[in-house]
Image (tube, rainbow, N blue to C red; front, side, top):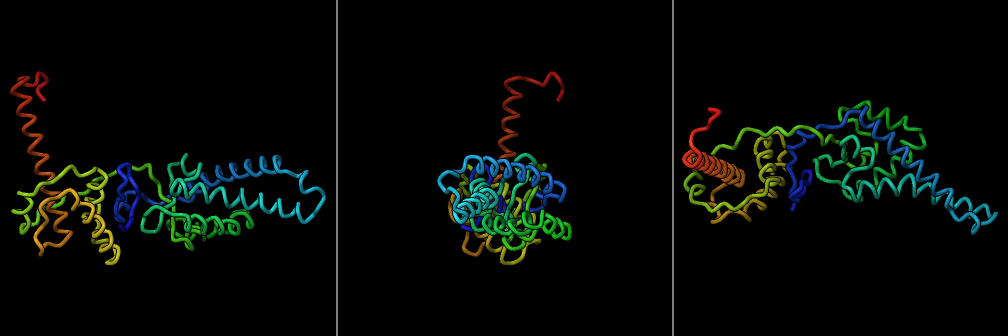
Length: 271
C-alpha cells in the first residue's frame, strides 16, 4: 500500500493533498529547533567524551584518534539519525516547536531519508558552522537545506488548525448503489484522508493522484459491501460513499433530535 501522507492516530495516512493543511516550517522556526538539537548533541558529546574509556587506549595516538572519531560520528550523526528514524521525523527541537520532517509527498520518512540528512549535515551544518545550510534554506520557499534536497524531504508544521473541504457530491450514476450499500464504521483518519484527497486531487500530479487514490480506495473497500458497479471509477466511488455516509449521519442526527424533543420537551433556552 502506498503511504503518501502523515500517519494519524488510527494508523492511516492522509493524502498528499494534506500538504496544504501542513505548511512548510519557516526558516526561523527551523533555526530555533535546530539550536535546541545542537545543544542536545553538544551535551551528549561532552558526556560521551567524559565517560569514554580513555584508560583502555592509553597513549596510543591512533587509538585515541579512532575513539574520538567514533564519539563524534555517534553524537553528530547516529543520534539525529536514530531520533528521526524511530520518531518518524522528529527530534527534541522539532517536538518542542511542533515540527516534523516528511517526504516531499508528505509521507513519513524512513531510515534512508534520515541517514542521508544526517550524513549531509556533517558537512553543511558542522563543517561549515551551519552557514551552508542557512544559505541554501534561505533560497527556497520550503526552507530546505541540502540534506533535504538529497533525501527528498522537508520540514512541516504540525500544529495547525485543520480546515475540512466541502463535502463530496454524490455522483448521479452511483446514487442507487450507494443508497443500498452497507457502509461500516470508517475510521476518522481514513475519512479525513479521502475528503482531503477528493478536494485537492486536481492539484496533484497524475502519478501521485493515481497512487494515492488507489491506496485510499483499497482501504475504503474494506468497509463497503457490496462492491461498486464494475464501470465505476474509484474516485467516483469514494465520492459516493462519503456523500452517502454524510447523508446517513444527518438523518441519524435528525432522528436523535426528534427523539430528544419528545422525551425532554421543548428546549427551555429556546435553542
